[in-house]
Length: 206
Image (cartoon, rainbow, N blue to C red):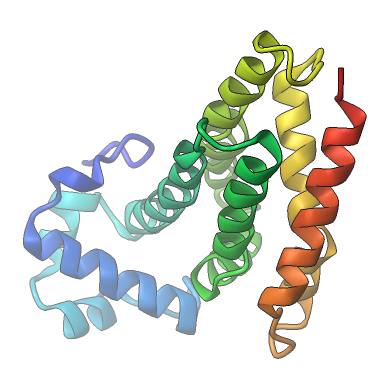
């Protein structure tokens, strides 16, 4: 059986990727409990053996769906451009981060996790370890560099990175979760991110 907490998506076979894509669509639109293995096989092809060999079981499929989305969102923070002024670089990366957080895929992921995390606590643990703990490290490293360059004065770069991202997504994230039909505009995202970065920089100036 696959160790679903350490599944390497890049090692999946072409059939495994088709199964993963089908499972993601069905989990998001039908719900995890309402999606059967037969429904996934009907959409992706293959067999139960294919699922068992690559994912272990339906829970392993759910873990793989979440792991792939969390990894994609975390990788956004690796794109910080150190050649830019700090304000521009932070606005750029935070805007990309918030756009990802408010995407239809991530909104569906959050709703799915909220439904299942009580039953499968390891889902929350995996997201926390790969998102707020590990995924944030490129931003932490960048803030440490800004401190070393005496551009900013930051005592706790990990905490400050978390606070910046929380401010950047702010109430727009909660609104999108609770009011899915109320689309967030690009102007709203730009306004919120700009305000968050300004507050952050003002709080950490030398």
